[in-house]
Length: 346
Image (cartoon, rainbow, N blue to C red):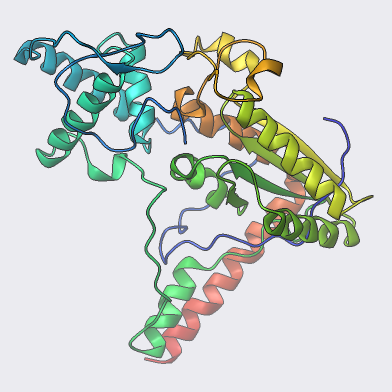
């Protein structure tokens, strides 16, 4: 990692009460493997009668003039089983992530029609109870409501159960994870939330406002003697790579001399080769494609369990074990104090 410039006081992600009751694992323990924009794939399954084919050779799939026969029950059963097998080890995972796993297993073709079939079958499998709804994450739709309580003792009970001490307060570093896509946020949130790390969504090229806010965070961290490590998850394509370059340049411009490092941890060329990730032709319409070597790979193509492992390794390498153990000990003690306060109100 090359030194860079940028990062400061981090804004923490707060889960709902009870979501973080499980004690965080030791940073020395092995990582847990809890087992928009490819233009040709839509975000929701739609009806389609024919296969999609690359008729122009430009990487975009269009409706075939020849309609395919309907899939047989036996073929659908194979697709269903491939879906069930993939989500059993990869959850939580996005719909696009499921499609890539099923396609890699050879159960479906790499077309928009194939993507839509996986989406429709996944709806049926969840409705029938064969796949839990919680196994699929959709980071593109959010609902927000402030936390409220009916009674004071109810609030204190929730506070005691969900209380977490700032994990990075006594650590020598701060970590921020940035995802290019909303859908990936739900895949890695269990890891970033467990380790009290801020998770941001960039959605392609970041605004000046976002870059300035990130720079201010980095500067604040620098003033307290900390180095900020910013990790990126994004598509391996011309726009994805350039959007990351653009963000780093903007942040460094707002925070010259700040102590920060920026690292793209997915998708990398090494991961593409190691995991034999499915590729797609780079978009000829993208003006940046001329300077981009090789084919493109979506971050969704990386198995969800691998993606979580990559993120967890990036985070935990910066934790000082002694400071971590002390923080956990104090957290347990303070949670007990809160629990006793609840008892005193009854």
